Image (cartoon, rainbow, N blue to C red):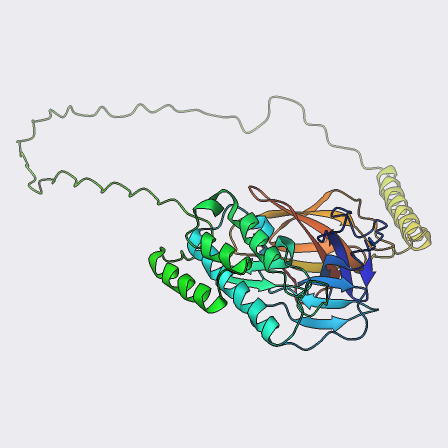
Length: 386
């Protein structure tokens, strides 16, 4: 996996005219003659935020303030780095799953961004689904400021919206005016007015992309049968009990003789008893001496060197499910085996070596997500579930 300063490059994004497909960043990649640029999706190892890397590009990236575009944040070794908003995903991931009202919002924002770039004479390198990022009703375009032969690719914008709409593209109410604008048969003010009129006829946007089924209404509890508070008490006269007179106890008298029926033998006192007691005392003292000598002269075990342990707290956003952490790459010196589940989160996870770890987060019912973390990490790691 290739690194660029404190940025980690993961996947290469295929661009129009580039014969190479999307490859891993650690593979050897050669640029085609008509596509000298390379675009990578990566991550900032300090913050964990997703980035886009465009290279080779000389100098520092421009400071642009154009809405609905990814901002340039850094320049490293002939490359420009753009930061992706937290929680945003590639539009290609949502192909065929976006409702018309949300897609219309994205269309208006992207058209407005390209128009602003054209009015300020700022080129837009490419417009492909992999360079458009979306979150909720917002959309952002990446690569603004990268000069190409075609400075404002409206055809690429139309193709991107066609890919995101999927099978519903043919039924979109703004398809015909959008295609007429791209082919030059409709001016932008007229297109903008038609899009505003169409937005009033569409259903309002839901609160979130996933649709949740309505929970069944629990049945109302039945009213319990009223219990009578009347207590019926029946009092009867007790039956007479005949008491028989008790007999006096029998007394038995036992007379014992003061003298035992056998001969009593008195023990003979001898000096051997004192010698036996003295021997037992000497033996006990000898055992104590031997035990003390062994305790002070025994070989002492060497103190084991304790290995350092680095604890990192993992949190899930939103909270609720549990996830497993699988180790994909470890720093030098770590003894953690690869491709094994290290722990279940949320909670504390222990690492045996400081450095950069590449992990894979698995949640039941969701696609696994690879991430890069730095250990130690006092602030903990937040995992945003998509």
